[in-house]
Amino acid sequence: MSLDEEIAIYQFGQGISSHKELVAHFMQLTNDQKKISFYELHRLIRQLNPLAADIEVALTESPLDDSYTSGFNFTSRWLKMTSLTQPEEENNYIFLLYLFKTTYQRHYQLKKQDPENWRYQDLSNPEIVQNILKTHQNLVETIYSDPSYRSEFLSLAKLWNDRFNFRDPNYLKPTPEHANQYMNYDDLVTAYINTFSIKNMRSIGILRNSLEKALSRQYKVDAQQVERLISEITERYLRENYNTTFNQ
Image 1 (spheres, helix red, strand yellow):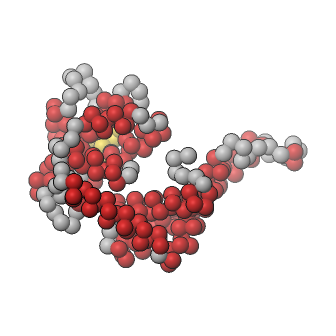
Image 2: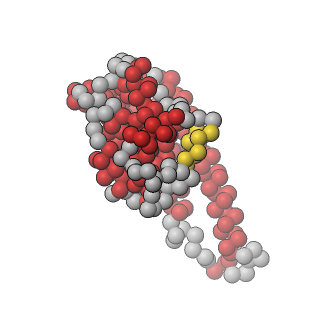
Image 3: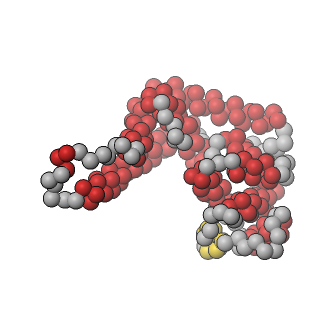
């Protein structure tokens, strides 16, 4: 989720905008992008510690009719999605938006105008929004230009590029030497995929965790901010070094 997209969701949470533009944007996404969008919004809701009663409030305040069933189970402050598929995906997304708005409004009344957190500032003010975007972009440029993190981001970009290439259907074409292998080729490939995937994601996880700790400490940013910073800068390295992005 880009910063612009997150701001748009919080503007909806503050009652500044309608859900219609958010839903229109969502419906233009690919299936994979929709799944990501669902889980990112779901994550924003979890971070607000929703109450069980919020589900009924969200259903009441949403434009959804009585025939809609949320498909959510509420357990230990976690919302468990049981259905995200068509033809209910649009309604599910609308429900998520209103559930976010319901939980956010409770926090917003307590933290309104918090100078330490842009999410509780007046997002109807264009100057405030532009300042949020400018501050973020300046930080992206500062970290990107910092030579002390260059090797980490280069390594992270390489790991992601290796993963992208590994998913390429042409990456693991059979070769003649496999013809007389005792192990079935499909079994060999499956074993290799599993081993590579585990090692690759473990390496990415370790490197990201190290960067998150270092950047949070040096630049005093929260977990959400540092995750976005790392993703944006890594994608920049991917474009510049491998001519690819996370969405390709």
